[in-house]
Amino acid sequence: MGAEIGVRPSTEAAHEEWMAGAPGRLRRTLPEAGSVLAVVARPGDEACYLGAVLDAFRVGGSEVNVLAFSRGDASPFNDSMERLGSIRPFEFDAAASALRATHCVLADYPEAELRRLPIAQLAERVIRMIREWRVDLLVTVDGRVGDRTAANVCCRAGRELAVPVLGWTLPHAVARSVREATGLSVTGDADGRIDFELQVRRTIQRYAMLAHWSQSRGDGTHLARLTVQGDREWLRWLVPTPACEDTPERGAE
Image (cartoon, rainbow, N blue to C red; front, side, top):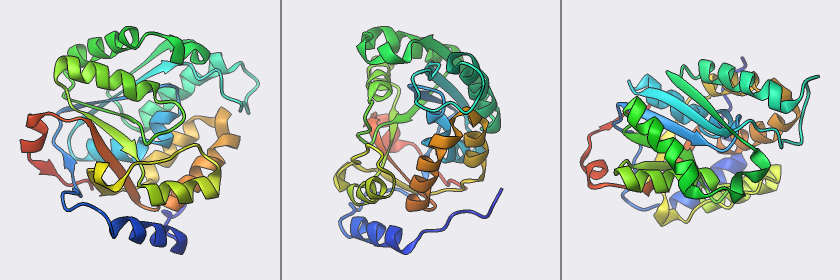
């Protein structure tokens, strides 16, 4: 594994632009959580978007669990000789192992139909996992990406059980740099909506991304995004609770 990616000058400029308007409540450490459940729409998102954050939670003492709703068979990339629906569940297991997840579940809904399924139906699966694994914090991908199904489902489940939800996001200025560098459909969030800016390590995340080897041609886009982000990740509360505001924070190593 190579040396960690540093913040390039263009990234520093985007970061400084964002920090100029950053709210004073911005936090630099993760909230306390005994058991974290990452919920994503498809295999790969748990590594490409959430890998560094989940590693930070685990290093801080949290149990990490992962749920993906589909096999990721709608991906335009396939560098294997197998059908994506057959190979990607194994890649998901390998990535979860790299992230040292305690539990990982692939729900096996058709990816192409995921957006059309009732939110309540998908949320029921998340609710079962919360209860079974005694989850006290949900983490998902938001940031105004093209598909917000997982974020919507987490919000539904979190509100029903009073479990807080954190969403991965980017500040508008950084998102703009990401779009220009990669073409990814991400618009980010306004400064006042972002609650956390974390300094992270990328090593474990990269190992988890390599586990999705059928997607290697597509990984170049996400590696370019990580170059823009440098060693920073941003999160915001999608579903906060009073308990979240009063909970002691823990450093993300």
